[in-house]
Image (cartoon, rainbow, N blue to C red; front, side, top):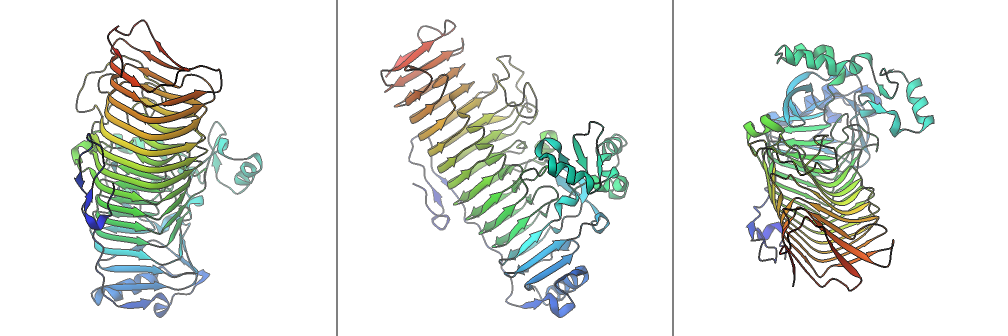
Amino acid sequence: MIQDNDKNVVQINQDHAPAFVMPETELPSIPDLAVSIRDFGAIGDGIHDNTKAIHDAIEHITALGGGKVLIPAGVWLTGPIQFQNRLELSAEQGALVLFSKSFDDYPLIKSYYEGSRAVRCKSPLDAEGLEHIAITGGGIFDGGGDAWRPVKKMKMTERHWEELIRSGGVLDESGTCWWPSEAASRGEGIISKLQEQGAIEPNDFAPARDYLRPCLLSFRHCKHILIDGPTFQNSPAWCLHPWASEHITIRNAKVRNPWYAQNGDGLDVDSCRYVLVENCTFDVGDDAICVKSGKDQAGRDFGKPSEYISVRNCVVYHGHGGIVVGSEMSGGVRHVLVSDCIFLGTDIGIRFKSCRGRGGVVEKIHMKGIRMNEIAGDAISFNLYYEGRAGSGEFGGDLRAPVSVETPIFRDIHLEDISCRGARKALVINGLPEMPISNLTISKASILSEEGMVCRHAEDLRLTDIQVACRRGAGAVFHQCRTTQLLQATLASEQSEECFVEVSGELTARFEYSGLPQDVKLAVKDDVASDAIHAR
């Protein structure tokens, strides 16, 4: 049973998944005053620069103690918008806010990106250290991201690639990546040298400005945030990025990026707590709904987990992952509830990712009522070899590394009522030999896929009432899994009349199974101890 946030309690009806309190997400308190940007000289013709008019409207309402700044229907060209305390920015239906494509309009500031402190260009929608802020209405905020983003040739049709080259910009030496400017193409090298020199001041990074793409929205160290209704699209980097913030409500929003958008994430909840995301749609070029908490040493030193996060009734049309935890999770992720979501055509459906070096603990995650269709990769994925360390997306082998603060821990994760029609693999678990994924439960799942389940280096793994229909290979493979239960599983393979479950690895212990159909064979490898397999 899952109770609404106003009841304040989350209870999963499984003995191994105790109840936890999901605190209520508090909404901002904003005075009932309103002004229109038109009153300050704004012109919605798509030609005039309205940066000053919007700034003046915000300053005026702030001087009165806060309130609403209205953006009426029209096409409004502007530079970045700086929020103030107790401000609601309301873009009415028919309002299209176009952010400038001139890089010089975006000052360099100290910010955070991909889990670390960084100098970036100021975000089009920017706030730091504020309270009680909101973005509402049925309008559209367009970040002008096509002017900033590099584009890989492999993601374009030949015609679109040729059009892109004719538009300007430069190609890299291999001719496979387009950059919007020469400075952007050289940015990574410039940044590396600056970091070696210990540069920390924003002005030091001016030669790499074109490379330092901003997120469309960056709210840092803020409290009581509401996003309700607008469309956010075409972001230079990530679209929505709340960082180290509390009491965040995001509802009825649409988040859109081209499918080829480099770093085109939809929502990255980063080191935040008390978050509610509901009734939103995502169609993006990278991970859609992502929970993060810092990267490697920087994330561990900051030590602020993402926690008490509820995601419900959302739809993802495209993205590298529908719901994603990691890979930057070094500060920890806990107390997350995802329910009643639909993922359509994402690269991976439910995605957990990390690697050695991250450290951090991911725990107490509950997902229920997830529906998926035509997933390009894995329906459910736990990959602790992300980012090319010991194989990107592939099994890293049985060689153990020393356990340290750099070892990521994934435990107490429970998935229930999951269905997917169409995926490459039904389930992939690639845990670390030195730190298996532990206390993972998947129950009441039905998946149609090309291949079945592959589980490596897991401990206290329970798969109950699972239906997997695959087109080839084994229905399920278990390697080096300890204390595993495969109960009431229905497995079928189109490749042959007989489907099989394979168990291997000298560390395998207490593999229990029950309810396997008669045509499902159990194949136990020679390296498995004779007393490790138990029928129930």
